[in-house]
Image 1: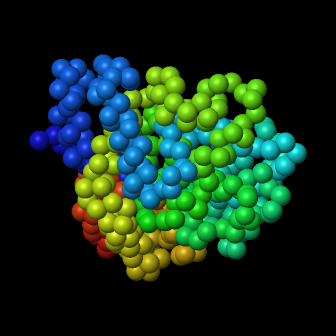
Image 2: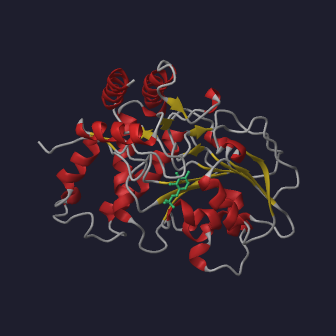
Image 3: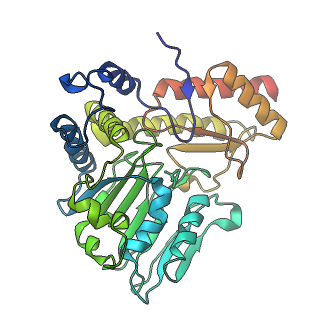
Length: 362
Ligand SMILES: *Cc1c(COP(=O)(O)O)cnc(C)c1O
């Protein structure tokens, strides 16, 4: 047996063990071809089957309507920061964004290259420790943009902002796609880098309401148009076949364990275990997120009293095979990323460790 640890890295992140095992099993001989999936044509019927299934699985698991186009694109979520305005910005209109952290800021910066951007709400005043309440967008906005889960700060949207009819709502769901049951059709554009909650690095899932695909200016380079990829089912050119294949396997796995509703139950249990440790620690651990309604199910961020104590906690965690608990440099402290693929058992071990660490160090 290979050594496996509990991996709390924020992304690339842990993948379900059965998925890795299946990939290993098929690695040298994919679908009876006598070749690896890395070695065959993206237009072969064996790969095409995986490719079509991967898009069908997204639709099925998320309950997407027929008018939603699922695409697999390269370039990471960061590429979507500019491809969103490039594809749906309308001449003379301003886009509206909510600034809930580092990734929102990067998205806002890129949108600025395509026209006026208005930040309608922000939680920067407290270093992004909450999701702004009662957010509303304007009727005359080109589109509205939120970051569904803020990986670095540990906040997550648990309500729908008010968006006037006709204004497309865009959501960067990179770090919480499929973490709980949601009306995914409420969003007109969803994008998510795969390497957090879906699969490995190298591909971005983009879901667009079909009628928006025609908004792109004609004089846009071919590869930058969503429409190009949508028309060809993401096979316009040679796409990132291996990451797509891995995403497909991990969605097979999600389906097998009961889909999003089933994983949501486990995710809530996992998050509660850690937030309870923080809340019951009498201040030994303090959560970065001040508003409990904004707490993320995926990234649990917290601090200890001093950076020295945090370093000690991190090192002792590592000795117990609890890996990747250092917070992002902009927040400091600790962060446990507990994506869909993190088993309940891993979080149990972490919460036991944190309780012991407190008993030994307060
Ligand atoms: C990681 C992350 C990104 C950037 O993703 P890349 O695929 O590395 O470009 C964007 N948004 C959020 C919310 C993220 O967590």
